[in-house]
Length: 514
Image: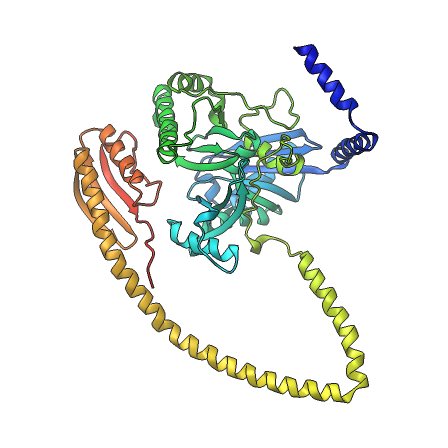
């Protein structure tokens, strides 16, 4: 059989005509030359308890370094008056010998919101952007004015087109970018750590668990797209190894069960690989106990970049995924290996250097050419100039009328806004009763006592107590899976081993009919 395969391969190569063979050879030489002359790519992974920096050149990892800190340290100000985060990044670059003015950075997915929207679910609109923005205002659990909103169309291998939408809290993004800029470092690309990890794995179907000391990420890649990206906080220091393994395994199984319950015809199979990354991926005992509790096989990450044998690949997986944006080719149409099609840049436009687009350059050239042609005509014919003056006068009259119309519209806008707000309040009142019904119904099912509920507009504080922590955990899970509330619901302090407390629930935004 092996001999037959070798013979078929030889025949395939010999069957190439001379022109095809030359083109393939030139492409191979082009890729090799590009690696040799390419500059250094510096990536920066920022988490709540540390920073990791890596330098690659020509697809090869050259340098790397990391620094750990307590979450409170990054919020302080360095002695020189600059943000502590920026000072720590600059100090790490100096100590590691990595020099760069611009970096590709990733940030934690905590407090971010992502949604997959099928193209068939978009409402009719003049442009795709308007349709996506209209849907996002309805499905995002956080008001869009508090978020930097980004989206991208993606296609699975089966040709299904979808829109991947991400909302990043403005304060989180502004804090990180400004700290780096004050330190003299300009991020040219920013993306979520979950996106970088999905690219590092480069699998059509995969489950990724990224474990850090104070939070962990669960990413489920389906058909080449990260369908689920959960970033959750946890108190690992208060748990034993056994309890931590049990807790993480439970969260993974809940995530898979949640996905399968909504995709009965295409469930996520346990034969798909599980990759464990992050700072705590080096905890051998924790990984071993998790493997004993899970039905998934834990596989070692095999990066497409060339890495030194002593590089802790699983801990630098996010950096590897970031570097692959520049170092590795996209997935080819013939099925060649490459990174996933999701390559959104979450850096807000306000922080990007201005560069004229091709459309702007084309418009400028057309404008200059038009002026060059029209100006001599104005000089040689007074009749054309007179007609232009008349047209200008008419245009001024129309502009004045347009301004009056705009002022009239602006005068009516407050009244229309007040009517819309009134409709929103009326609609929300009915929805509030339904929320209360779900809260009390789930509490009755799980023998949870609800002492009182405080309604605060788009939020409710629910004080409750259960007979044990398992019932309390099941109650919180039931509220999340009801679909009426924004998820994930922040648990009270001491979760998952507390038996009660106050849960702050953010209600889903309800659409208002005109």
